[in-house]
Amino acid sequence: MHIGGGPNDAATKEPIKLSVEPHFDAFRKCYPLVEGKGAGDFGIDLKIGKDGGKAKLSEPRTAMKGAAFKDCVVKVFEGIEFRKPKGGATVVSYSLRFTPASTP
Image (cartoon, rainbow, N blue to C red; front, top):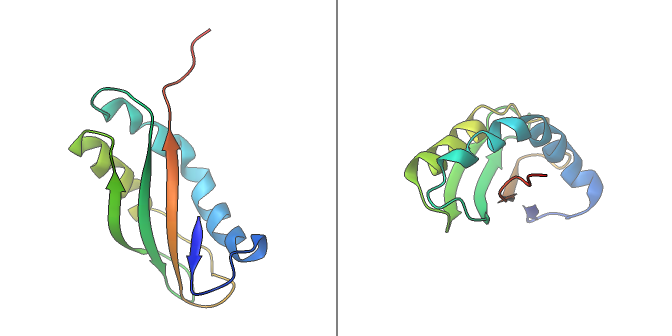
């Protein structure tokens, strides 16, 4: 996670982290939609208003194949109610790493 135009310290990242982490299971449910099932990253830019709430999303990017996968991840981000950022309105570049589940 990278905060644009502000400090990239733990205190500044904390409200974003606490907003996204509860949705990790929803993101995991998108993985079966990947074509080819390889590992990879998904990045997106989030503009979060000074009071938090829904973020304005832009630049979703990934080398992972499958429009349904990309749409699923974007939909999860669209549903997140972000906490109030520490420094007012914030632009965040957020990345998630997807890997195949290990089997015993």
